Image (cartoon, rainbow, N blue to C red; front, side):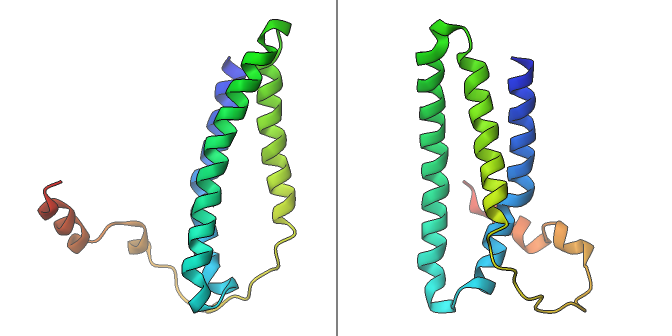
Length: 124
């Protein structure tokens, strides 16, 4: 069980770091008029992959549990899917750097005061 949780942690960290970049690269890969449809498709397939992945692994673990290696095999399957995803990412065409001289601003990592006020005043 420890290895499964470790794999889950590593895959979650991978998703947290690299998940947002898929939305950042879309404007560079598609025309403005196509962006809403592409963004919706990316969101939909991501959601479906999460739902079907959890359902499949839960079902597969339950079916293989009698053999004594269901948890191990489903963990291996999750890692194999992650490796396959990494390998297929190399098939993406490289994008051009739009502004290579743009300086990094540390303030981009923080939430500005206007946004905090909007959240506070929302009352939700």
